[in-house]
Length: 222
Image (cartoon, rainbow, N blue to C red; front, side, top):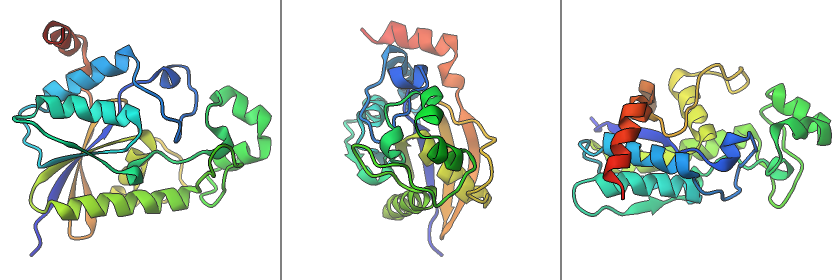
């Protein structure tokens, strides 16, 4: 019988674009000060959980969050970067405020809001992805890394859309249904891969982001 792998799936800390509801996608935006404090608090929360590996999206908001986790692990730990864990690519939507997308691209916005899983965004600097293609990419990346570390615990540091894909896969939710579950910055979301089945253990752990925890970070970080 194959050994299961525990996966801590983590969303990056806050960025300045998150704060003003500006769509990021593949745009490479750094953490803001609040996001870095969240990442540092996350690292402290996970310092007693031995991780066999920390794998991150190669976008810097995820890498910075992953590095904060790695710094608190016992002994030096490398962050492995994987572009397969990037956020969904939104094509021409990227860089726009949510409030402006509907006015500039009304038909594409309507398809997005209607959860047409095969709709592709208008091309911008990069070609957008359908939700079906994005979900397949994330499923393959998660399966790849979980199988590399059987019987162990790993952290995957990624993005909101990645968390959504994992949640839907674990609960067998159709891709076309509305997203009615929270996806939080710097949250810990626990899964277990057993064979080919992804199981949800806990969702949206954010106690480490309360005021007391962030105060502890302020005292520890020069």
